[in-house]
Amino acid sequence: MLDVSLLGTGGMMPLPYRWLTALMLRYNGKSILIDCGEGTQIALREKGWSPKPVDIICFTHYHADHISGLPGMLLTMGNAERTEPLLLIGPKGLARAVNALRVIAPELPFEIRYQEITEPEQEFSFEGFRIKAFKVSHSVLCYGYSMMVDRGGRFDKERALEQQIPMKLWSRLQKGEVIEQDGRVYRPDMVLGQARKGLKVTYCTDTRPTEAIVSNAADSDLLILEGMYGEPDKMVKARENKHMTMYEAARIARAAQVPELWLTHYSPSLTRPEEYMGDVRKIFPNAVAARDGRTVELNFEED
Image 1 (spheres, one colour):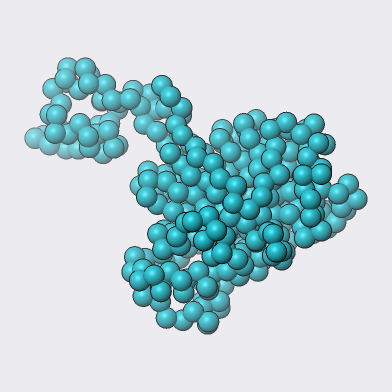
Image 2 (cartoon, rainbow, N blue to C red):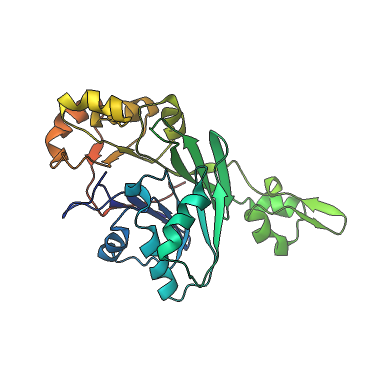
């Protein structure tokens, strides 16, 4: 089960009814936050979720509407007596950007670890899931992210018995561990069938359309893209500022053949994104003009 909550859907500046950009994903006791715009703490509280167990924060880029909520978030984590290290992932300049913001949050009871993205596409592996960053096209260095939860093949008891694999090793093999014991090597593929479909969520804001978004969104259960503008006369502005319209996002979702698209990161001028969804759905029928707090629980397909 993967919980996905779009905490804030605003771009550039918060509005009374719309917080700035932030996405929370929760899986197997781990919490991953992507972007931390102003108001993210309030959005979390409105959702009823706590910032204390956040394990990883990923940044798409370092414009204020994507990172300005970080100092307060760090202080809140510290006041909640957090002691576990916090991992931050982001483009080149990560430590410099965060340390500049930490002038107002200098003392924390936990360690901050930094992992800079150094390649156009780069993957980070964790226990039970992977995060992949991919470069997009904005006015500054910017990345989109996919979170992937892999699912191994079904355990085959008969094969384990036929190969006389000790029962005490079964659970470790199911977890993907390679075990050497009594001069024999036991591998997961000895007891597992073909890998089953996992879960994947792709998130991308502040960019022009690129092939990298389409290719990385493929096989996603949910695609979340910026729809900065819905007004037809804003196409020139979208190109100039390297943002994306709702219609361009819909074309990407159609090309990637995803089951569902959530639009986010609206311009302050786009006060009623729902008004434009009729034309958006002509391009991609399963598109949603997401609002703050929109949440879904993704589950593995039944065998």
